[in-house]
Length: 268
Image (tube, rainbow, N blue to C red; front, side):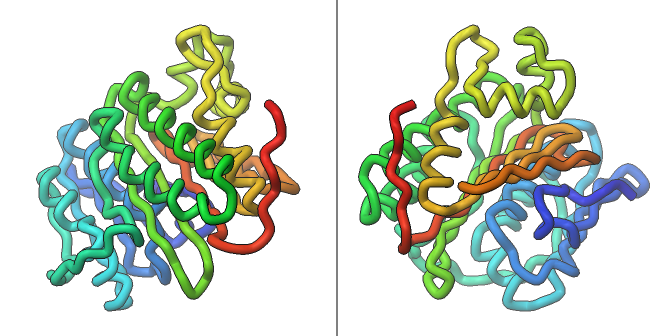
């Protein structure tokens, strides 16, 4: 068994293994389903199809969590990629403006709904931060299309009782190291550092990740970035790096409060 999709501590209870030619993702012990779970599972399903493997998803044991994952159309994504699952059927209601159901990111326009939802929620707090997040997420989506050599997946949810918005983007592509090796990246940790400083494979400064980090941290939120065998967790006051199996491609997760203190953007 391989370590589980380890995009942060909240994914530690997710198990992934390959058994008899089938990649199995087990969410039965997951107590809360976040966008990062949704995009990570979708990316694993896409990777399994790419690698000629079957795919099987075990739904969360908690019925409300399983229903939520199904409401976010995770089962439909797994079905579309030729996998199987035991998520329950649900009747979806229109919650436009509250969430972004897990969806494929195959062209830059596919990240637009995510970027617009995040920007709209942040605009009430700070329009400069909202614009920075919109531009940053749009460029992150563009980078997936340009460099990952794979489609990606996006999802977002608002949690009113917690006063927060969470979003995630993931792809099962080549990862940051392969993308930035020509720019001097020596390993996965180094590749993450370069990406966070705006280094691009096209010899120009990339603004997607740096802009998103600045905006999220000034909102007293966090950003999690994992690629290959490295990951980093960033808040306004600290950055924590980790090593070990992180994510086969690249995954970005962010959380922003929908109220409270806002740290003003400073000149770059």
